[in-house]
Amino acid sequence: MEMNQNQVEAIVRQVLNNLSGTPAERNAGAGSAIPKTARVAMLTSLENFEIKEFPIPEVGDDDILVKVEGCGICGTDAHEFKRDPFGLIPVALGHEGTGEIVKMGKNVRTDSAGKAVAIGDKIVTCMIFQDDPDITMFDLNKQNVGGADVYGLLPDDDVHLNGWFADYILIRGGSTFFNVSDMDLDSRILIEPCAVLVHAVERAKSTGILRFNSRVVVQGCGPIGLICIAVLKTMGIANIIAVDGNAGRLEFAQKMGATGSVNFKDYSGAEEMAKGIAAQFGGHLADFAFQCTGSPAGHSNIYKFIRNGGGLCELGFFINGGDATINPHFDICSKEITTVGSWVYTLRDYATTFDFLKSANAIGLPMKELITDKYPLNRINEAYRKNLAMTGLKIAVMAD
Image (cartoon, rainbow, N blue to C red; front, side, top):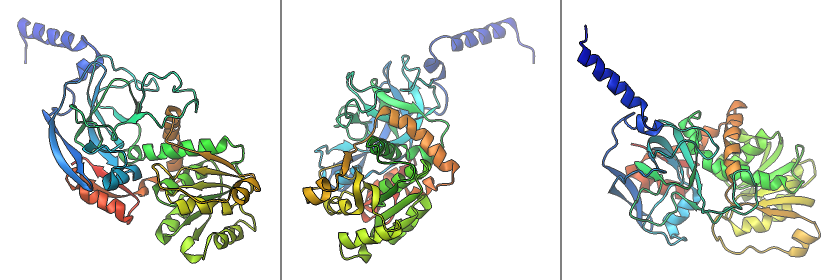
């Protein structure tokens, strides 16, 4: 078909218009149309989410609008669902989320690692930092980042799209986020919990005790403990014993790299468990232990499993789980145990986690099998009850 001069000029004008403006403005029309409202799963009372609908706000020059694809349920989420320890109700939960950029402000060009971002890219969020020079991408552990904010644990406001249990989430300027378009959806959902364990292992390494040939105990085989085993396995640590009271989880621990297991239900107490552990380590106690439960009894017991001069990383207490009883002389002083605590992660740990997940998949660890159950947003109450029943591992809420 021949075109007249007016048609040619119209096409040229359209092309020139498309070439003007920022990349975000040029791509704003890409993909499906953005609706005027979004559903948000709002925790309105203990153990009760309500699906609310809110207007999608304007996207500022430094903001990003993300269409949610999925989000895992964290143990912290479960505590908030059951007890509201942070006093946040009503609140939009969900911080293990990922999704696709559908709109972004003109000032947004790169993620927190300097990687270019565009409409259609897949991202995850990290922490929301205030202007604090002690917390930077490349300065590890200069200051604990546990006091920073995080999407999914923010007080409700006039935006409402503050958590990943929603159709859309608004990522505001000043937030940290990463372009992870080269990873599949299930791997992206696992990034946040995996970052917790990458950080814990880095903290453990700071003691100088955790080495390639260390004998390691991991106590607690929920998602956190299982991921801990996987991180150790990818580091080449081959002598790992898992401790738990669930036979199915202990079996999965061996798929993740554990070389032995101890079911605490088979023993009369910590001293007997210690003997069972030593028997699997050729008569030796552990060089290093990771305490991955939120149980005070678990913390009290763990010292019995560690040799003189060994090390411990405690990461199970993400909220106040109560006091633990230990004997400072026998448990710490006379054994000269070196102990580190671990809390969330740094930005650098997040970047390292991407490489960890790729390495774990490359050596055949069944990382994605950690996600045992997926629920649509409108069944989120059911998903949480499944999480509390502990009949699965990682429970995820997916886009409808």
